[in-house]
Length: 442
Length: 170
Image 1 (cartoon, rainbow over the protein chains, first blue to last red):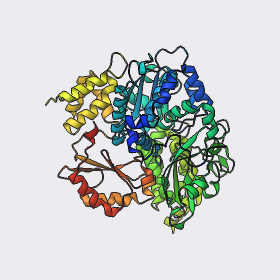
Image 2 (image 1 turned 180 degrees about the horizontal axis):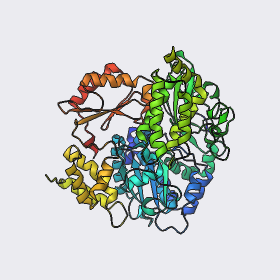
Image 3 (image 1 turned 135 degrees about the horizontal axis):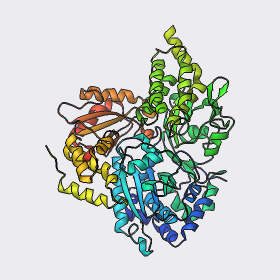
Image 4 (image 1 turned 180 degrees about the vertical axis):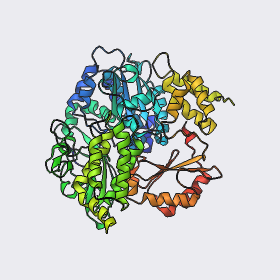
């Protein structure tokens, strides 16, 4: 049985001001799991994480233990990097997690660094998160002073260092190879993969990049066991998910919820329903990079595999009659993404909302790949004229054609992140775009 | 005119150089050094970039490239307290654009501009990760959540009394 609503794995200290300090964290059992982990062999920690079915909470949902397993066995210098560059519109969980429980993240990183035999480790935090940067810097200092970090962690002979690296404003740095370039003091432009960071990452060394929430799940996994964590979840997805619900609901918020909860339950049971007594028009399931769900697709689970495969979610189309091909004939429904759920009510101007999303991607494209640099700008311009009532009849197909030209043709996923929601909104709300264009003709 | 880092900034840079384990270069410290330079000199003039370059032994072109890639580094002087008002999707759905317009009206400037007394700088920001409390703005270490247009006057007055320059955490 998956965890019931109310189960708290990573948000148990939310609202507890005292727990933000080292003393307060220790009082609630903090750093006890680290002692347990240090007595374990690195491979045993890794095996627990593998058994937990923990999947990356940053967006891709990749199995964390499998990712850790990609580090070459003979590697002599390994790095663990925490991706705290949370910038995906609609996503606000990592910032809250850091603010309320910085030491859980640090404990998670030390345990993970032990499993990976990583000595020099980094937290890359978004430049705009100035309050959380200050919280983390203070917490790291406390952890050093207490011997949890340093040359000889708690006398175990294990060396673990942690440095907080502050960004300076660039969404692209949430992409792991752009993040590594930024950490190396370069412009944050993504690298071609392969080689993947687990083989060749920071300073050319094997590097594991994990999301904040992912790493904060590690202490509970080591404390209570991988099987326990796997049992909290469903299918191949262990644990709970911290979801951020925003937009047109009565009670927006950051909620830790069971893996098998449906969007209907989230909106009605957790968030008090749609505001102003209205109905849902669309739901963005995991940050604006993910294709939207229509009102009749909300009974699916907010779980990694379900969102990709549940046949109740209509496939994204390039145009009526032509499915978007993810490669090898795979259809694109949507993905769980970053956990940023945005609810759009029936009064929402869909072309205008789509334009705002495209404006974001045009602003954030790093400029390295032509299809993305030029294409996101075109998407912004054409979607804006449609939204402003100046669209031309051919603009619907033009938007689809531009998006299709970007998808799959760039170094990193930012191009796809713009193309997928564009195609998704056109697939499910084509009539709204056509109506906006007809307004001009009338 | 040549610039110098303060003793405190020099100490911070030297300490950071120890934290990145790559031999032969201080390049990973460039972002922190740029934040420090911006704190000390208000903005990143050509001279400030030259100072960062010489301090870390990097080519000027590299430092220039980094400084112009990230949006929080500013090449021109601007108001001390930066108000970053989000208008991205979650904020837009809850009238974030009306709040931005209220800031523009109250300050008498457009987004991207600074007030003539150099107290405030207004930025239309992309998502600041406080979507559950949209519309929202971040000002240094201070968040303003669930803002309505009629609260903007009070926010400005509060920031007049208690400024939150972004350099407070550098």
